[in-house]
Image (cartoon, rainbow, N blue to C red):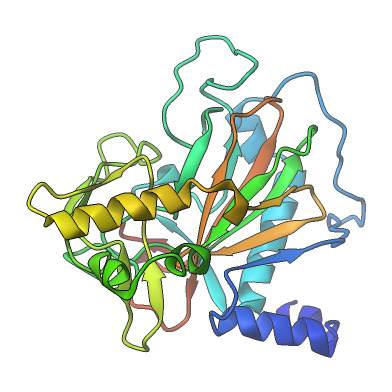
Length: 307
């Protein structure tokens, strides 16, 4: 399946794929995919008046078809789809929808948190966990190499926003950039984690450089703060970094639908979104790991990794 898909690409498309694999571009948008189910029928874009339950969404044939296509795309990008043991109950496919409230239109029994299962605005972040992004550290696997997203429904074309880290780092001095590589920052536990699992962390960096010399970022504007013992120079570098992240002009916006897929290099690009306006907006997300990355395998098929 993967080889057949690659064979259909032209030379330009193959060159873009290679650039993503070599970590030369922060994100990739695939449009006009015309994804079809096994019976060759198209994805049903008919929208009900309200969002179905998570149980129904997770068994929806159209969502499973989109997730299967995402897994093939990750394979083309030489990445393996996986799940963390501490997140999404160890399920490979995550349905991203306003199931807990917090959007513009209220739902019954609202109990929003700072996760993708709420309708609140999500500020700029890379995907958790945040202990490490380039290697195994203290029995924690690294953050995902990529996340891949498409939309089952997106009635109002509410965008996913992207901030390539190069646009941030270009506004910092070398000294300020180096300050972000020091283990001077703390982060709080992510509410996307399973109840009773996952943790916050202390004395981590925001920027890492891996053994091949690639720079990588881990960051969440909700969760990261300077350690109280950090020097004034490091704290000031962090506050300047934060102010740059909030600049609207460095943001790209992508409208997702069933025929558009977004692949984000998780260490080279932050992502965020505004408050959800239409509660039927439903995204389908998978995580991917590069082939040469070290991580702690708990189960091989499907691939479950220690978070």
